[in-house]
Length: 206
Image 1 (cartoon, rainbow, N blue to C red):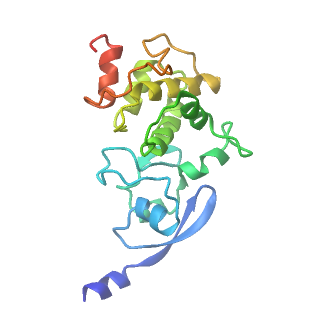
Image 2: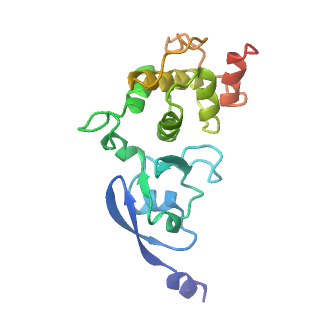
Image 3: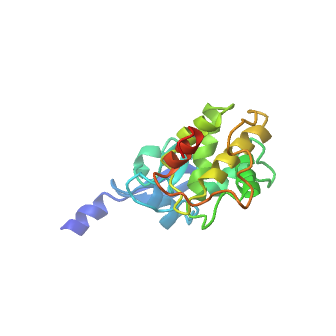
């Protein structure tokens, strides 16, 4: 009985992902994360906590960062979805096979270790910079808070977002304790409180 009910509620859904119309099979409770990974093979979007708390599953929906693990696939039929796989072809310096400025900045700053969180971090940063084109380090930390890096590379993440803003001509390099955070000797593993730990250092409490 249950299987018949589930079959009756499965339907084809057209969604636009990375500029291309795609078809997925969606039940009412199918998440966008599941559709992207399991049906479309876009595994750059990661499953982390499943509760929207870690940010590993972040994608862009109509240009804004959203947690795909909490987003019903049926709710985005008319939206433009961008995953990490499609970011370099979405303009803002990323066309013609070149990395998006945020992707390049993360690479230049070495802003990852295991890289499980990186795709979500990058897409969150893209969304953040669209709304805050001239960010201070304080604003970067607050804007990225909620995206968790279990390896603790927060100083380099702050530096990467700052670099991306500067490279895009949309921000000025701010003066902070993170100016030299790309140095190999920079602290990388303070996990207490996630990005809030970076804020304590910026506020002179760390």
